[in-house]
Length: 341
Ligand code: NAD
Ligand code: UD1
Image (cartoon, rainbow, N blue to C red; front, side, top):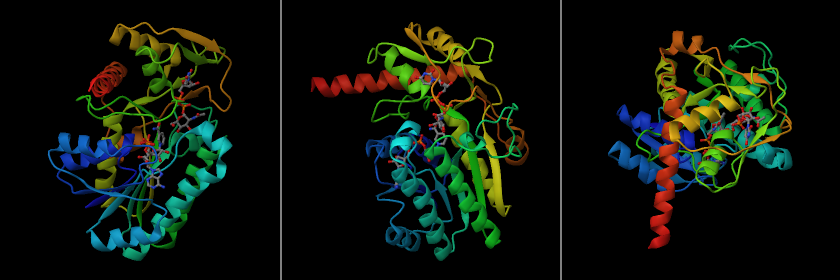
């Protein structure tokens, strides 16, 4: 059985579904601070059976001890965390407490229970302002420009220390680039509870008329069209990276770092044009100054994951955008039906 912390969230729910599709038993632990119980129903519908679900906090040591005693957990995928960069600047202690404290408590409980296989949701943000593209795993980690990024780097460092203290540990640090898109069914996707900060969730709300215009942060970057370039990866490809990592960790020990990206960067304007083509919906733009803390370019060298995990991202940018749009339209329809009743 695989325990997924944060498994009701955007990434965790897709990981849960992928694992269940591979006949794994899944137990989800989530405090629902940024997700809803209905995600569990959606996973169940798509998987054809229910994952185990416990509403609770990953910082609750007693709860973790009980879960690891009562369920036959072989490995943990640790997705639980807070992820809003701007919020982390204003509430650093909440971010360190949740993201670092949660990782620490989880590692302590796992060691005590004798569960030593762990996959961690890390981020390309740990590379800081790396200027050589593409970024491979041997690039030094930089100095993240915000407490969110710092909390990811600190959690990685805790896991590295833990792994070098005891050879029974087998840990995968998955450094995600920019996950976007939704499950092709339109039933699972990202559902931000507050105003979105990331590009695609914001764009989707503009496309569906909930917001007036998409701000383009910075038009003077040293890129072909002046806007920032990122490596967008389909959420289903990303989720499959976790199942491949869990498989590979069975034959490995220590810490293993894998980039999960496509290896191809797109600018903000390229992404917007592709979305307009795919959806037929024009997106009003508002050109703005650079957003503090943003890097010019960031894309992965995914070769290590290809060699060691036999994994590569397969979906095109157009598919990511079409799937995200289908999810957004489905959600709006559901809201209308609920309001009408
Ligand atoms: P999300 O907010 O949709 O999911 C996180 C889930 O964790 C939520 O369901 C939330 O309720 C839960 N959670 C938070 N704190 C918890 C706690 N203390 N105890 C139990 N549950 C808790 O975010 P996501 O996009 O699915 O991200 C998952 C992980 O991946 C996060 O750790 C995030 O930092 C990391 N990550 C995300 C991205 C991205 O672009 N989405 C990029 C890099 C890394
Ligand atoms: C951001 C975080 C990163 C985190 C990731 C997932 C920062 C500096 N980095 O990545 O740490 O892991 O989200 O949560 O916040 N853009 C616009 N208009 C918008 C939103 C974004 O032009 O309304 C641009 C940005 O300037 C950037 C690109 O779109 O060039 C992607 O932005 P975003 O989706 O926020 O992701 P990152 O900044 O790459």
